[in-house]
Image 1 (cartoon, rainbow, N blue to C red):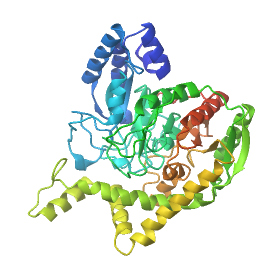
Image 2: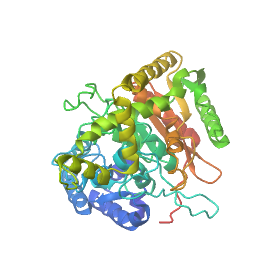
Image 3: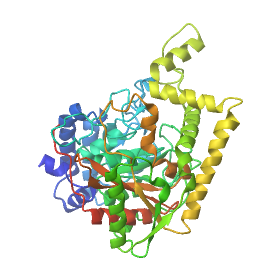
Length: 493
C-alpha cells in the first residue's frame, strides 16, 4: 500500500483524500517510511520532520471531517532548505548558518500550510542556491534517482540548485516540493529528473522568508510530477505580500484550469539564437519533435529572434554575484548562525566567513565585490544592467509575433557527480537556456518530453509573457499530452 500511495500524483492523492480512500495520516506515514528507506542513498532531505508531519496530517484529517478542507488539504510536501520554517532548522545548506531555527515562517510556506499541506522535511540544495549540480551543499551532493542505461552505475547529479526538490519528487519522496529559480534552478533540475518545474513571473510569489541570493532574480516556484500538479501548487504559493516590496498585488488565476485549455490558434515562437554550437543531436531532435507536437495540436510556429541572448550568461554572472555579495554581507557570526571566535572583530568576521562559506559561494562573493568596487562599477555592473534591459526588449518585440516561446531546457542530460566541478565556466553553461527568463522576469516551465540514448530524461522549456502563466501552462499541458512521456527512474535505492 505504501508504495502505491507514494507513487500517486498530487491531483490523484487530493481526489483520493476527498473520497476517503485513505487519510492524510496514512499518506504521510507512507512518505515518512519511503524517506527513511531512500534518503541514505539519495541524500535529498537534510532535515526530516516525521512527527511534525503526522501531527499536521492528523489536524488535516480533522479539518476534512469538519468540512473545512483547504485546496491542498492533507498533501505531504518537501520544502527546499532556502525557505524559513518556524522552529525547523533552515541553513540554505551552508555551514555558516549552523543550527539556525527561524522564529518565523516564510510567506510561501505559510500559504501552503494555510491551504492544508503537510511538511515532510527540508530538502538539500546547492549552498545559498549557488550551483547547477547540488554539489556545493554543506551536506554533500544529492544523487539523481535516474541512472544511465547499460549497467552504468555512476552516481548522477539531479541538477541544481533545487536538486533535493527534484530528486525527492522523482523518487516519490513527496507529492511536490518548493524550489527557487535565480538562473534556472527550478527548470534545469526538473529537466534532469523528468519532473515538471515552473518559475513564475518575478513578483508572483513573495520572497519574504526565503534566504536571499540575488534579489532581482530570485523567484519561488514548485517542482511536481505533472503539469497539473505544478499548477495546483503554484496557485497556493502565489499571492500578494505587503512584506515584500516586489510582490505584485494582483489576483491569482486558476492555473490548473489553464492546463487543458489547448493551443489552437496560439503562435509559438522558436528563437534562432538558442541553436547553440555543439548542441547534442538528441536535444536538436527533441526540440524539433516539440515543434511538431505543438503544430499537430493546432498551434502556429513562428521563427523569432532574441539577438542579445549571447550576452545573457555573462550579464547574469555579473548581476547575480554582485547582488549576492551585498546580500551575504549579513553573515558575519554576530547575530545568528555559526561563529568562529577570534581576538578581534575583523578576525571573527574573517574566520567565520572562511569556515562558513564554501568555495563556490566565496568565488561568487569575490566576483560580486569586485564588479561593485570603485572604478569597476560602471565597467561591469552598470553595463550588465544595460544588457539586461536589451534582453527584456528582445522579448517585448518577440511577443508582437508570438504568444509563447519553445526551447530546450538544458544543454545536456544529467551528468556524473564530480564530472564538471573542476571547471566553473562549464558548470555555468548549464544555465544557457534558462537565464534569459530570470533577467527579463518572465515565467518559464520545464516539461519532461523524451529520453536520450542512455535512457536519461530531457525537458522542453516554455517561456511566456509576464503574468501570462496560463498560456505557459496551456502549452506545457499540450506538450505533456503529445509527448506521452511516462518513463520513471528504475528503483535502485
